[in-house]
Image (cartoon, rainbow, N blue to C red; front, side, top):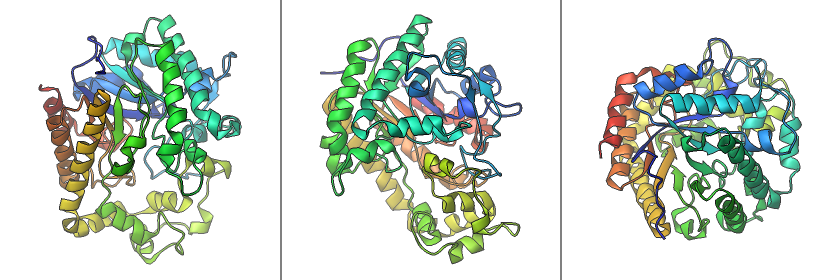
Length: 420
């Protein structure tokens, strides 16, 4: 059966990734202090869709309206040089009212929203207390998809009651359900395929959403499942939503730096990359230990991103990139083709919601520079060739990243997507 895209939605989605930052970075001077300004800037750059964590369980996990959300940062400057974790903290917001304001601002600017959840990943780490994190992990792993679906259904009821459902491009059960850093993977036994272990749970959750809200499109977001396991993915998805991070040369840096391993740390490479004023690794900690578990990011990675010299980091990637250019392109191409084929088998439109190089420190510019742009442009053009419904230019092209200032490039590449 072929999924019909509602006629009021764009023929092609140009996506900017606002994740949880739309509510964690709202203090004076932060990029989401003024949602109207953020949407106006997005439209200026050619975007018509914004992808968010809508906090469904936080806001609608019970019948009792939540208390005002108290937003914190990781404390002691921890995360200041990272992407996403560099918020000021201190905001107190009415979560449901703020969600409505986001939808209304999207309406005023003619934009649409991909409604998702990051609650089994980073979102709880930004709250002032661990209460929400503890409530989420207390749900038995086999019940978590259902709990998300039930709370997401209540959120959608709330949006509809306020006359804003036409702003929804589609609904994701959760971001990157198969990512090792997502607690939703805990249903898999040791050695078992995660996507196979999750399948029935995700299908049941998506069925619930489809039955209660048949006027909307529903899916689960997969990160980068192995191409030989795509038949194990949920079979009732109405959008084939995937992410592609090539890494390549960046993986070499991560491996040599020991950022994804238990190697003795700091490694010689990290020592070479650090700024002269970097504190000792053992002294660089968040304000409360629980926040590290809630972020899902290793402390050594945050330390390196916080204290690396951006020029040295970028120089390393430029020096080694020539060995990886073709393999990174082939990785992007092969995954785009496989995910498009998966969508075709379901009769569902395909979307790339995140990409393309990988997780880099906030002030580095490799992905925003000529090589990174070349990779992003290659991916966008391949996605267009394959008929993708929605495409992101780069995960870093959003108001909370320095790349946002490159207006001309974003406007041009978005025009490639929308020129059908």
